[in-house]
View (spheres, rainbow, N blue to C red):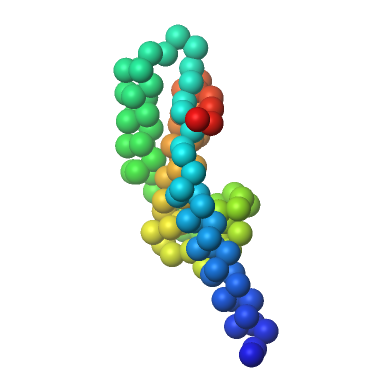
Length: 102
């Protein structure tokens, strides 16, 4: 078997497993001093809309995490989803929130 083919298959397997694990983990809750549930919900919705409409850079490469080990094998939809997640997190942090694991 060609070593490049083996590497490509392993990369795809790692990317798939990473995305599966990321999808299974619970998302963080967002906390901000003085913010009630309505404020958090409104700010979250605002950040989701901003993230959804943010233009995907032509050569977007996610930050090196377990989810992006094989970023070169990710589809456009997967890269878009990761970009939107990054943009959402930046927006919430910019509004003064901190992420706390559930």
